View 1: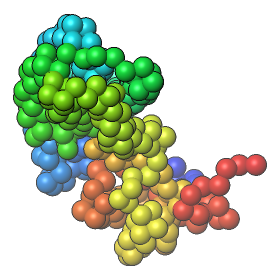
View 2: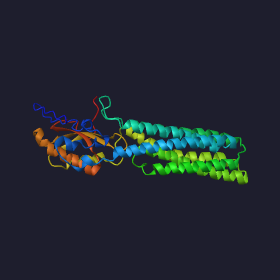
View 3: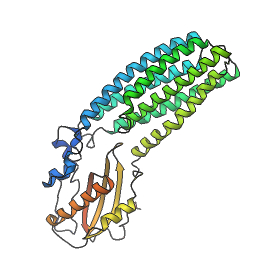
View 4: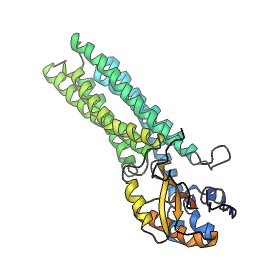
Length: 351
């Protein structure tokens, strides 16, 4: 399957895309990182690393769907309660929940779509649909918070009476439903960026419900009506603070930034410590989604050899990059006395 084109009339030994088509040979998305072993008959632990992904993704999808339906029910109750009680924080929480319901439903649809097999139009597959959805979710949540800030400001300027007891009762039901949603997603939040974004949405809803309950008690017992917009502002600040990290991470992935935990210079030094490697240059290192890291680079060898002699060397590089840096999808272009004058770690643009 690998594209091993040996141009013996040149000094270049190209082994480009030796891993780029393995996903076409598997019926499940979780095997699309095990191509190195299948291409060369090498049976290593990498070929069996991701058996749980498809099943786990199905579970996450079902959880997101149930959470969406639960959030819609919360929203309806809070809208009715907010209108009757004249509570801005309760209406704000309802709008917040409505935005979250939409965002979580988008996450559910994106998760289903992202498991579609790669094809000729999308050779990398559809994984980045989840990243786009996570970015959209984060931006929507921040926009909702800014919208609520404006209305809270208006309430500070023109305080209005609020029915504290009704506000308290509705917020309590909202808290219970949000707690259930948070518990459902807690286990999966660190394994998927989209689920993490949905989890943060719901965590914010849970905290806002707690704050609304406190506000309802203060209004019901002591008639402190200005606490209603104050609660709205405090919850909004908290949500923006925690959502910003998700937005930044999704932007970094879409910009194909180098993963934060990998030092390219350290990676280069590690590869060049292998015998018969002259240098590694023209490095590109990026994340396809929130879990999969890709690498492509040129590798200069110390002597002119046959392509068959390159294979053991390539396997050493693959094993090192997998064990030390967690990289499982890589494309290496082997060369001999090539790219002189332009052999830096990062390729210089042509002028």
